[in-house]
Length: 263
Ligand code: 1GP
Image 1 (cartoon, helix red, strand yellow):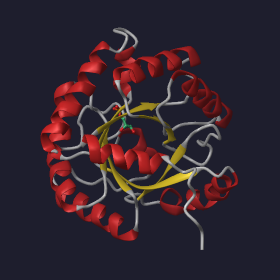
Image 2 (image 1 turned 135 degrees about the vertical axis):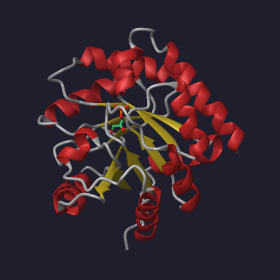
Image 3 (image 1 turned 90 degrees about the vertical axis):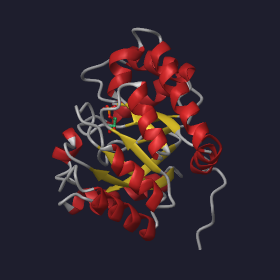
């Protein structure tokens, strides 16, 4: 039987932090170097780390260049000590220098490739690298953005929180370590807050939420609703360099204060 690998520390550390702090903040970087530079990414990471983010996720739906992902992760590691976790959009999204991978299955895709086939192709490479793989159920809710389009998703309707909760519970029973509710990057409607409220009370594994969360009010709302982590990507790209992370610091402080009230 496979032994627990003591080098795989990212998930135990995140779980401990969730237990202690209630809700975490994850910064998402799209490693697509066709529209941004390594210098730009380095600055975002520096300011996000100073603002108190808990982990850096690296991923996007339209990555073509695996070497770019490796370079981006290298630049990120130069600018932060927080865990760097691949948030893979496909099998070419991995990087050896990352600390872990969210091994995520897009459960409400219509296409088996996104549910398990791409995982079959990628898994042996992760084993070769002795990379920590953290299983995560990925569920996309309307509008879904690019991830929903690329992932050939049967979107969960915005007025059907019970469907989302039922998927999340099924994911827990199958053995996923966490669930991610995604509205799509840069969308104008976040996941409805009642989805997070009802599901976080219905399951026993951490529930992460992302897509369109751009201010403190939204972030605090999801924290109060029971999210174990709030993910922000577009906000960082658009705002964090301009004010050197000052507003992000307030957002993260707001999340942590609201989370403390729940503990
Ligand atoms: C995308 O949920 C994440 O996968 C983050 O979305 O870019 O809108 O913050 P934003």
